[in-house]
Image (cartoon, rainbow, N blue to C red; front, side):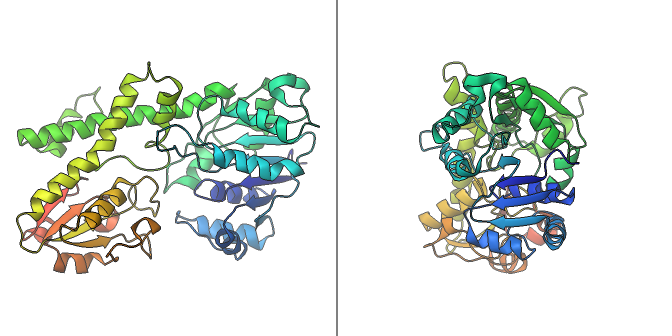
Length: 414
């Protein structure tokens, strides 16, 4: 007999939908809940509304067998996994409103013995805050932040740690850090994850689990900031940064990451600010790294302005809008921000090439812009700006761009 007969996943985005589909593939009944009617209807047709390799086949199989269903409203379940956005506000402080809204949605259907797991990357203390919010929403139930092991509900945190483009493999193969408000909360959550995780489930406290995910992303952010700062220095000194990094990385204890036009995505561009918000006086390197990476798009835009000054009628092709290669995810994308800034400044005709989306994102609504193909961009543009190293762009050869000014922020031309 399965330890969980029915699991509900709240939030059917880039993490929630793959998680729901993988659990359903293990024979567990899964109800996915989302506020988007389009997402719910698409999933119930056995289709997907996001791009992730092999996800479409897994969802189709799970829906066909009846193990996966999507809904706009929650229903009773044994476990509830919350996978909703955790962005930051304009002042860089964390926005937990999506988490609170998810709790308000599921609170009426909770019963004694339920497990609530927060997957969303969150500031330290959020899991305890969940327990407090639930106590307010359901005063008839005892919660672990006050009742400890005598609580009626189990509350835990297990941060997602998957790589877009490899989500289905890494959901299963990666080790998971599982932190409970109490040891029993953690153990109950481990029972859930062992249904589908082949990696090791590592038990800790909720606060440590929260900080672990923030630490992982802040570590990468600091290292990317080093690479981005190095690329600016190399421009000043007329050195090829890509060659330099390759040579420096031949040292057995050096591993410099690749520079780019900035840092995007829902994790690395956001999570370090949660640490800064929690310990503003102490998080000095982490704050500076964020500032360096946030300023890199401005540096790229200035290089594009200088290139545009060389032409009477500049035609600028932006290659890529996603935040990383070979996905359609535009969240916190520096490439998208650069494209928007260029369109707003009207410094020339702007061509947008993004092979992983079919229509312009809402962020560019109102601007004179349209998607075009790589071939069309090569024919028309006199300035090429490589913002994302999609596989389609990697096929380009130096001979293809000899007549153009090339600003390569991803090193596809080495």
